[in-house]
Length: 175
Ligand SMILES: [Zn+2]
Image (cartoon, rainbow, N blue to C red):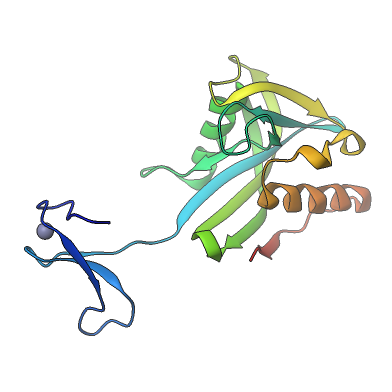
């Protein structure tokens, strides 16, 4: 951050009184601009023995496969955000959301929260962020072409849990 979103004056990075972290503080109005991790919500949409993946139409990782996921918006619950992202990226409604994996990615200040869910009706085409949407059995997942480490790790856990027939909630850390 270079300029204050409140008043437009330059900001300085410093540790405010009674704080212990560097913050951007406005040189003019003294507003402290706190920055906090971003929440990413997404789904593993299931139908029969297959799950849905989207092939990315945008960078980063264009052309690679991923699960529907994106930034949680203000005013949304986690479940609403996950359902919205699935509709936007895949064109499908979903039902029966179940929390499945929480992944801390401290290096980039993100937390991923992924839900298992049932794929319901298709109500549109894949959005502009997806080139195509396809259903895969676990043994068909293109492991070399998965977009992000966070998605790859969740998919690996999911496939292992499917073999065991139980889906506990997982807490993961990615460095
Ligand atoms: Zn200011």
